[in-house]
Image (tube, rainbow, N blue to C red; front, side, top):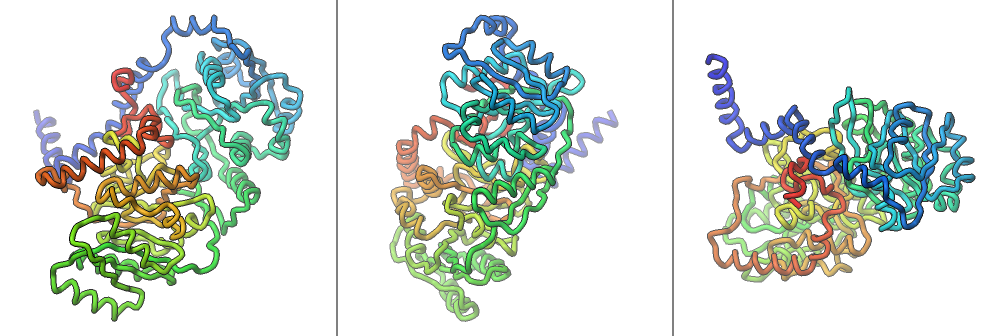
Length: 553
């Protein structure tokens, strides 16, 4: 009884410290990474992977394309045994001792696809079968899959990966030690296999990504890692990244180690000293605005201007503040937007029109910048010809996550990733601390080239309040530009966690319904396909493996 009383007392203390919701999140995270997640994963396996009768049935499958594989690997007994148990039997095993042997094997191969398997890996019985099914339906140059760990006979730590993303793979080799490559592609591009680094698979992945977009991700567990902590040669991986950057002509200062081993931060060179315009909509909230401006004044990048878009303020003190701050800080300019109704998209478009900079940062007035070199961090990505938008990591005042990118499909439409989760609860596979390509980022703080903003016709003013930034990001992505989330840009966003939807205001409800309908009609196909950077094996509102996949689907 005493032990129970102590536990209850501890829970009460935690509720007082973090509130009911905060305590629930902490408990959820313990469940997420503790013993309970193992039970959940066992249930996921049961619901998703083929049963014995299905595996037996696979053995009689005849490929309509008569696909055959050549598996290149070191002579590992466990791996060889797992290959011999495959339900699809058209394969050849080629053991290697040195990387230099690979080129000769590929040149002489009569296979359709080469399978590269790293150290400490075993395959599931249906691996080759699933590869065949994918290949028969898609023209793939490179294929990779999800994986887990098999330690002491127990399957743990599923790694459900995102779709292929250039900046994500340069930040961390999330694809891992198992890839499948079309043999003809390798024979056509013989240079790929010359002078490979120690981590041949990472080297091959980056080289292939330079030559094709036909990279397919099978969102299934197709292999096990048989050691809990695979040793990573970070210097070798940095060399591989450097080679890629030089081949692609991306100028950089250096490559730093990231938060976790095997994570990297590339510092790209900034070209010139372009003027950057911060566009800040504001109505009366001068305390928030002053906090933002004072935090921006600490920026290490000096060639910027702050364009405050005045939107129907009512307080005399607001205009007195405008006059004061404009005198104190020559970088601040107030532009009056004269319409008598609220339309965030129209306000932002007006501000961008008034901006003099080559680059524009859309930023809310309730943001407080933490990172002094935040403008440089945005410029180093937005200056790249393949990048359209660069967004930031935003915190609530208690340092829980307010924004770490946007996922299409959360709450049925779009929402912030890992919202309200404490950063210390994340693991390396969560990617929150690495630069990533994503579907969208919030306009509470993002940078875009002014000319690109104009070319995309700015924010859609039919979306007066909701979905305008996500809509803009998706337009940019359709035009083949990347949307980058950069966690090395940190800021507080003083958005109220307790602020609900405007469900008591009928007019606002009607407006939201109209904007919802516009967004859904416009992006039905995109929403239907699912977010390419978000694995289908996660529940969209929790980031946990699906407990009952069939029912959820």
